Length: 168
Image (cartoon, rainbow, N blue to C red; front, side, top):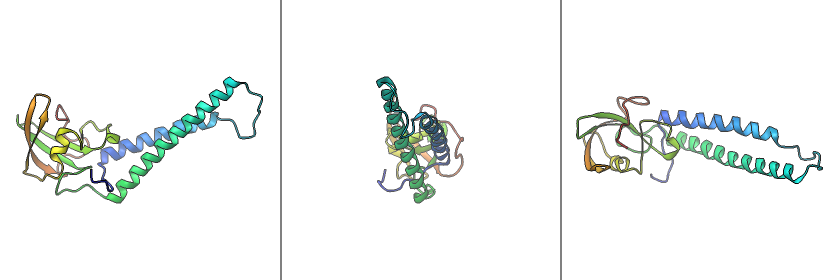
């Protein structure tokens, strides 16, 4: 990761937007259960503890919502993923040593809903970072060191194309 704004694949954006919508609904449900500021002060300690717990949950939801909104804004600033070299947010098609071709998305942990996603810090993901079509990469797989050829960056495939299989 560069430390600057990182692009986001279309599949990852969809997943983040869905999580944001889910959290917003959950937040609304929790917020409705909280008492107004000047309400009845005669509740027992159990009621007060329950309200404190709901307030803590509301704060947790607010933090996660702000994090996701910030990530979406960052992706907007970064623009579309590069089609010249592999980076965060890229869609890349690779051919493995066994001849199998797969289209993968290079992403972040926040993008874990993408079935074809490989994290940028995984062995394969880090080997692919900065590479271009035609480059061969080597990385540690569960069965030992292996290699793959970058077939294309950003081209065919896209969200839903290929499969992640055991590549990550």
